[in-house]
Length: 335
Image 1 (cartoon, rainbow, N blue to C red):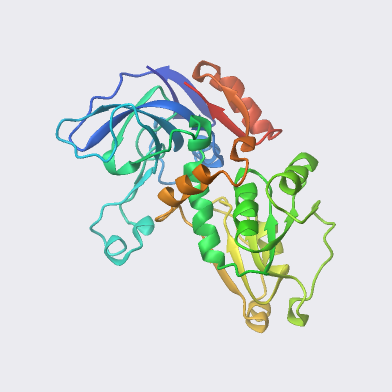
Image 2: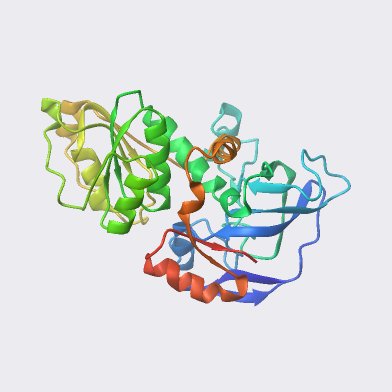
């Protein structure tokens, strides 16, 4: 089969590998749709410390159950469309034993530490698959993993009806955050440099207003100005600082974007103290994948509009260029 693999720093290459042989406890999935993610870019650049060398990328994917190992107990059957939760904990460490499995000290991730879904077939633990209702397309089903991360972010933000919410960045993750924040009762403002993405946020995902960077007036949170909850969905030091500065006293900052390991931010401890801010973050998608599938299946938002480009796996190089250009939204490979 053909796969897209991280073979050397700076590139993702197409190559040939054998279809994986199933082990006890595993399911073979014929991949139907696999999204390219910013994490894949970090992996390609050697910026993801826990990524395995020569791994087949792809942690945002859906597919059809092709085979179930005879010794495997599964809640799905051959032919089912499934979404994949790529994060598999050890179930033995202190975090796993205390309902924080996403912080597992031995977490392995499909598409990061073990071969993933940027391929024609992939073997995964049976516990990683969740059946998707038949009316959901494979492309939309492949959004379950990133949406589950946003579900966790919304949980961290603890939005209340009537809250003023700011989302910084309207890429796929930011647009998902806008949608869930608005359906949670928040009034959502967006900061995003792309006019196309600002318009998408307003027209499709529930934002009330949208600003280009540098055009939203500064606020004094100590005087009650600013936002109750701010989601930073970019992963850069300047936007992480902006998130703090735009939050009103008593508010919550949620850092969602993935920054580089070496990045640092400059914030005033006194300002945090004076405004009594809560600064939190999100790491992966604990207990979110099934909820994400339900949200996608309800289709209260046109989730398919997030998929701006689709390519065959043989066209991966072209897809990667489109992804790097950032001119669209979610780029999906259909092997």
